[in-house]
Figure 1 (spheres, helix red, strand yellow):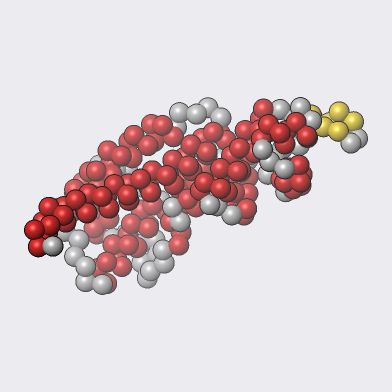
Figure 2 (cartoon, rainbow, N blue to C red):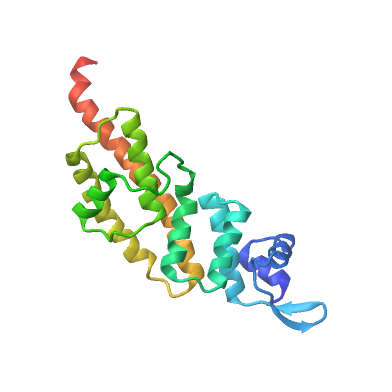
Length: 207
């Protein structure tokens, strides 16, 4: 298909497509002659990914460019998924005095759930959050961590089973990014409803 047809199939303006081509976010089409190139379903897939990352997940151009470069450079799936998780869940935003230092409670969760004892942005973010709660004198009991981590372990198993299914790297990023964004919001909404329901049962007669 030509540029006009690519725009029609993807719903992305020709001007935006030219911008993505210039920025290297979209691979060049097959040259027909000096002023014309042919594009394929691969280009539609990449444009759909860019639009989803912008409109649904809310990533900026630099974040999207970084993920696409990793994909085009052939980054291993584990590395790519870690990068998607980092930008979608903003794991790199937490800064405390601990930096990447392990926290006893975080280590306890890893041992309790038999998770790999492996450094990651997610583990650093958990450690930073636990340290913050400790500094605020908010107690996190081992029972609470057990209950929370067990629930999250079950959820994560379902999420990763779906996320790792696509063969296409672009589909992998799309599934992971949109899934992480929407599933995390779903979990928060379900938690809010559950909390509201328990509060109603406890306090409705006092209202």
